[in-house]
Amino acid sequence: MDGILIVEKPQNCTSHDVVYKVKKILNEKVGHTGTLDPLAEGVLPLLIGKGTKISKYLVEHDKIYEAEIQLGIETETLDREGKIINSKEVDLENISYEKVKNVLSKFKGKINQVPPIYSAIKVNGKKLYEYAREGKTIEIPARQIEIYEIELMYIDKERKKIRFKVHCSKGTYIRVLCVDIAKSLGEIRNYELS
Image (cartoon, rainbow, N blue to C red; front, side, top):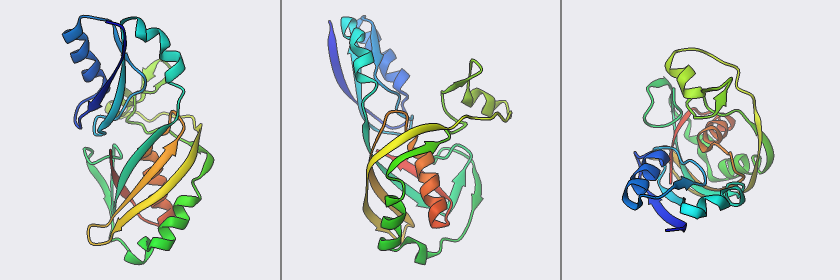
């Protein structure tokens, strides 16, 4: 079998897990066109057999995500799975529709982003999350990404959550974008991605 298989990746499953399962079922060479965080659910295109040869044409494309920021807490992994390392009372004045919309608009365009320590990016031949698990600190170089569109979907003041949609370049870490948005609002955060 050769071609592209579109898979809806569930939460709490790595992209590697999906590739492994499909590879086992089809008994073919299988690859993916970009990693989704384990907590993310969404479309994961898989390349099967000779289809893996077109990977270089697909991995460079931009992405669209919906994300939800949970204001008031910060975790070591920048997601809901990590240990809470900071928390604070949320100032509801900071999450007005106009203020949030204004803050989001400031992220549109080319920006520098430092990938999270809990990521699979390699520095000096070692994955960043391996340094994190060993308790080591390392300088992580910033990368340029681009936010083409960013749109506020809703604000839930009762639950202290903000949901937005973002169209961005390859390599954008939504977890980091959520942190940066929350910092701009004066709030620490956690996130969920779909």
